[in-house]
Amino acid sequence: MRDHRRLRAFDLADQVALETYRLTKSFPKEEVYGLIAQMRRAAVSIPSNIVEGCARESRAEYLRFLEISFGSARELGYQASLAERLGYFGKEEGSPFLGKLDDCEKVLAALIRSVRES
Image (cartoon, rainbow, N blue to C red; front, top):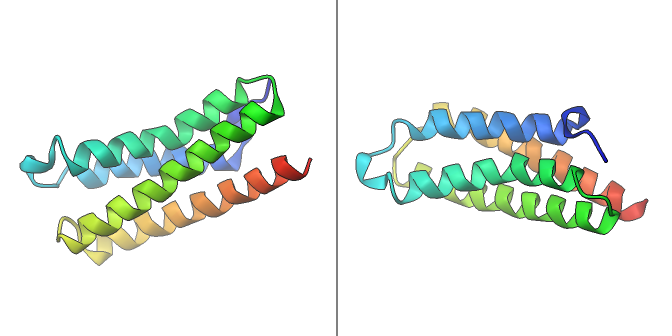
C-alpha cells in the first residue's frame, strides 16, 4: 500500500479542502444546502479519493481513484468560478484560492500521468 501523506498532491488537496471551508463560511445563508454544500463536498472528495486510492492494492484501482479526485478538483474549480461571479467572494480572496486549486490540479495530473506510464 502507498502512503498518501508522502504525496504532494495529497498535501495540496488537503490545503484546498481547508481553504474551501474558510472561503464558504461567508457565503449567504441561503446557499447552505446549495453551493456551500456542493463546494465542500467536492473539496473533501479530492484528498479523500487520493487516500482511498492509496489504500488499494492494484495500480488500476489507484489510478481510478486519482482520476475521480481530479474530476472533483475540476468540479470545485467551476463552482468557485460561479461563486465569484455571483459575488460571494472577491478577487482578493479568490485569487490565492484558485491559484492553490490550480497547483493541486497540475500536481494531481502529473501524478496520474506518472502512474499511467509506470
